[in-house]
Image (cartoon, rainbow, N blue to C red; front, side, top):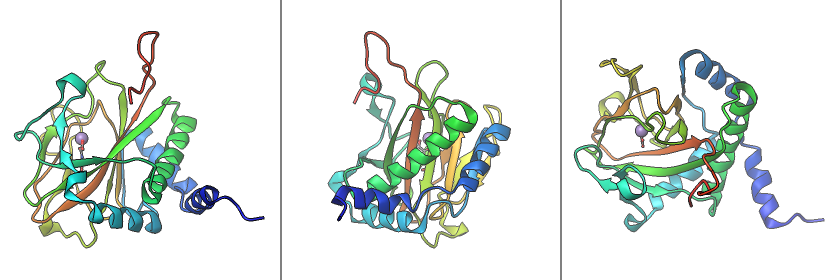
Length: 226
Ligand code: OGA
Ligand code: MN
């Protein structure tokens, strides 16, 4: 008997899941150093679908990124000049990405007991010259974002194109570790521990930034809020 269309889609993408040994390496890194940098990590079919989608998005799908959530949300040219588009599972590429991130979430919870509860992510477009100054994705005790996940979508990215992610080891580190935003590379790090920044590039730069959160629901507020 023929399967329902939805089942076809999810079955298809489940064939492109994170491999067990790759998940294992990410967990080893997180345990030992709090971050992991994994080149050629996104499955090629998922990567291609995401690239096609992000390139075909209309300008109106993106909005200027701001700092902070809810009431504290404001745009600030000095800190960042990228544009973002929140991802949903409503399209096949979005569904594939969320399915991939879900496999990683379960693997990390099983191995490291981080209690990761939900995931939110957006496409980010950095026009040539755009940047995101040194920042933390979360501040201790102020947010429930605990683990950051970044994936790069730029084919043929060379050293001269700039746009590196600089991952600093701690508050004092001024040198940092430079990551080339080459298609397929995935970076995972503890949101409260690693300041980081995005250097300006000579051409448009596309990435996905996502955050795993722990559940902060209480009697007065259901979490996540959207
Ligand atoms: C972010 C971020 C890094 C990148 O969106 O918070 O740090 O390399 N992105 O795109
Ligand atoms: Mn960040």
